[in-house]
Length: 443
Image (cartoon, rainbow, N blue to C red):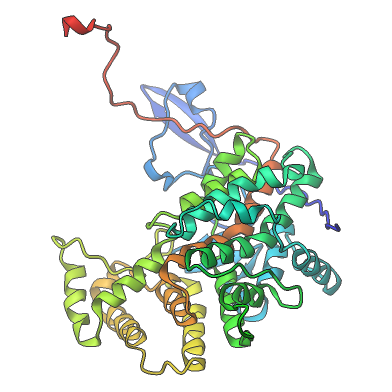
């Protein structure tokens, strides 16, 4: 078993040269300000409680930096997404998923020799422990694939206990490769199990995306040849979802990791968080909305509902928690949707027609422009996956498979942080004050 071991120097925050002054009850406190390489300055409040006896209040952590990271940068106002400094549009157009994996993990694009070794190492470790097949069969046939993935990935620590010591640099590297290599196999097996078909073993002669499609759609009764256009579209979906800074699931992985949990438990926690419809389930919700609209002539009705403050209906696939401009991933995803539907001969797909017309009308409507509700990456990804033959229940597992490398990169970066502490958010307590217990007969 050959693994590459790289040592990246951690990039510390720039020297503090500015301070912010907080005045509280007549006393002033100087808070350090850190300047990142790109992005807004950050006020350091780590010593605020010790000095002033107060906490900050930030539900949803919308204005709080919980870590420093050199992996991904997002400028939501300008619609910018960079992985290690490289724009996502360039990576999606000119690179491929495993090369992006290398970039996220090690900080630089690989040489041809490094990339070949990396791809070979991943390819040679896509099989899972044979006893794990029995673990799959313990689930009900109608179990959601995400439920299966949460359980199976969490159980990997029972099958691969030789790579759970987070203090061993080599074991961290082994666990990283195992998760990246085996996640497509686990996702495909979860899908096959849910539809009652036999598991398909991975093939070392196929690339990462083609291998996943083969494990999902081939059957023993006949040959299956992966179309390169579909494989490329699948690879782009993987690439566009590889990492997205400190989102909910990534923050979950980091929080679990801060306790010293093993890597498989941390990634399982990330999968569980991603399962939420407000996070990884957004593309499924978008497709369901397009199906609900049904035909182009009904679009004005739904746009009017989206504008009605008294109507709970929302346009799914529009807007983003971070992006206040066009989602840079959506442009590439739209191109892939056109290519896939053209290949499959789906020229008059009613859902695609609804999607395109809805996008056009929404972009021309001042209401959506003012609120900066632009199409995001989920708007077209669901259409692509459905055209490929995936049920909506597989949309989020594919997202989890794609995001695994981002979670691992963030996990490894956090473990190398000399200032690492167990996560412990504070609260604004609004419950009862201290009171004495009353015996039951006296209540």
